[in-house]
Image (cartoon, rainbow over all chains, first blue to last red; front, side, top):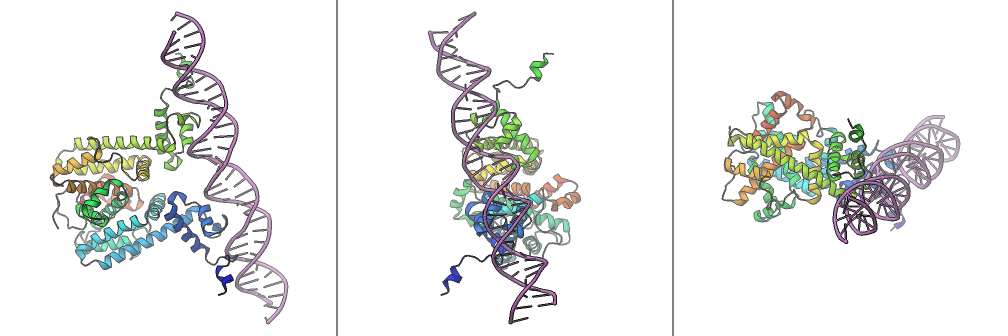
Length: 211
Length: 211
DNA sequence: TGTACATCAGTGAACGCGCGTTCACTGATGTAC
DNA sequence: TGTACATCAGTGAACGCGCGTTCACTGATGTAC
């Protein structure tokens, strides 16, 4: 069984402490919330001295950025999955919206770190021009265009429509945890039904009627 | 001139330290941001010992709640003002939305404290049933009904529509500070024009077309 | 109107805490010859 | 294949800091008689 090798204390050199620290941070985050996310706590959780992280991250901020970065990647993946699974282009935007809000609901602390670090930088990740093709932002944009929710020849219109959709989803994501809405969720038969109903009321993805 | 009385150090008993502490907190908040808002810093800013606040607030949380409470009152007032000044019912919702986002832009740290304390409680202020008639929530709701954006005989529909509008505005308020949108603001001729354009894309306040 | 005294609203020193970061160090690794 | 040595990635103790809160205290206020 070579149990001594299996159960043995971690060797002096860790192998991939960078990774281990980010994982530890994620574990802490979900277990204790964003306020528990100190560098020392992360090192402790990873079973390493408080100084060790400094061989891998310049400072606390850099670790947080790394954690947030993983969050954005996960969100990208969730959105891509929702887009791929949508039965029709007309339902795609709603499905993406629901996936977005579900991600926030399922990873509340991570979601908070993502936006907290973004706010520190005053910018969402990617400069939205050179952003990667599989990003959630691009998925939303392309879906909007395809569904007729934005004029494909008007770049400003496209950005506005995409931003509007993003803001709507983020707004709902931030609100969805409040207890006020419990009875609406009940009345509608579940949390996701509530999300869908809200998106419907926002007219998300409907071709706009000019006013 | 009785300068000794005017310029004199504050008397032993303060008069209204409660008020002074909240004001000090507000000053700190706008000057240094939410992270600088410690009980000790507030006491310092108010020119009082670190123990003094405990004669007026049970703990730090209670002071924060008081600060947030003032924020919500201010927001209520801003929304009421926007509603009263809207030239027509059809523009009212847009004006309210713009006023909401402008409030967040002009009081970013206060806005953050408002939602941070709300999230701690997992509830927005007022239980939304027994909420006061002049609250922003009610203003939005009544305006929506009046504008034909919600079915006045369907309480669920009313709540959904109001919540949807609230989420949209909050989402935009959270995003509006990001640098990504600078060029959109430029292209549209200003920040408020950008807000309006986003709301337009959200279809805020338009009677919904059934899908 | 004056005085004794309870109560109120401050003070300032102290508590223990966890934090981010630095430092001199040491054990492990890998490369040149 | 073996050895010297540079480099890498850890350790653990220490730094100074600001925090929330408590405590015994004291100065000011106001009320009963």
